[in-house]
Amino acid sequence: MEKNVNDIVVEPKFVPSKEDLVVTRNLKKYFPITGGFFKRVVGHVQAVENVSLTIKKGETLGIVGESGCGKSTLGRTILRLLEKTSGEVYYDGREIYTMDKRELRDWRTEAQIVFQDPYSSLNPRKTVAQIVGEALIEHGLTKKGTETNERVAEVIEKCGLAPYHIRRYPHEFSGGQRQRIGIARALALNPKFIVCDEPVSALDVSIQSQVINLLMDIQEEMGLTYMFISHDLSVVKHISDRIGVMYLGSFVELTDKKELYDNPLHPYTKALLSAIPIPDPTHKRNRIILKGDIPSPANPPKGCRFHTRCPEATDECRAIIPEFLEVKPNHFVACHHVK
Image (cartoon, rainbow, N blue to C red; front, side, top):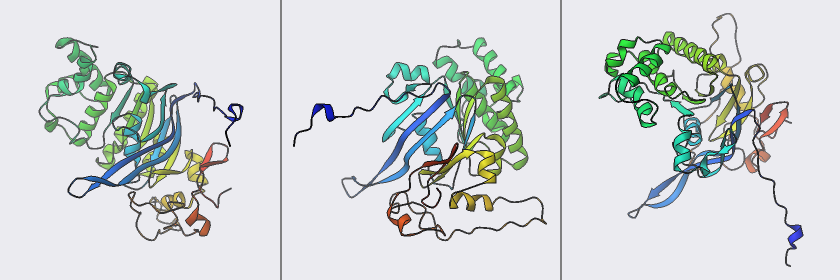
């Protein structure tokens, strides 16, 4: 039977809200697995699976989850440091994956990243002036020499270092100072959006608070928007406005930080929060111990991806993928048992 032209429904073009700086729709990122003599593709690692999120202008969205759940891959795919498999990514109303090379080059000045490891993310053969000033020269914002050095000195001073540090090399700094250089490099182009990929996980606890406070001060001063990736729930609670919980490439819960910590709904979120250390030794918390290991993203379980470790799993969980639904105002959960 032939379809009538009038029966074809054309979906209206998606238009992001003006309040949202970053929007993803059904974003996927798979990595091919090759095998055999001819290196044929025999499977895929499903690092990011159907992620839809929004980050409002001026806010900090925290992303938490176990190691290997796809947090860093999500951040890098949003920035096009990794190419998507499918889905859409919008930045300030523009789809970044439809940009041509020139548009993409101009957009790079607006979106930056602070990497996790301050020891491997800085070129040991370059001075601070060269590391931070490279992007300024590349984008034609300053000229080589005095103009670039003055701008670099201004930026690193804002990050808590002295102007004379621009002549030094990375090995002459501590871990906390190196991360400040990484932050200065991200700020050099006056961006609007920064992905902070576990920026304090490699630092001592005393230094972590200094770097977190620096990021918050800079955000207030420059009106920045952050996507803050971490596995430390205490750090995320301190800096974030909203928090998304990832498990095996997908979001299981997303809401504002107070609601998440006071009223977690997903079993995985409850287990994560039960593991946060409490400074008061007289206060006892019921720990939720998850059995088994996180499944491989190359062979995720059918149905709900968390059902193999979930204490509340049923046959429905094992067979049907739960929808990521808004069960309360601005509180999204992917669970068959949460309505």
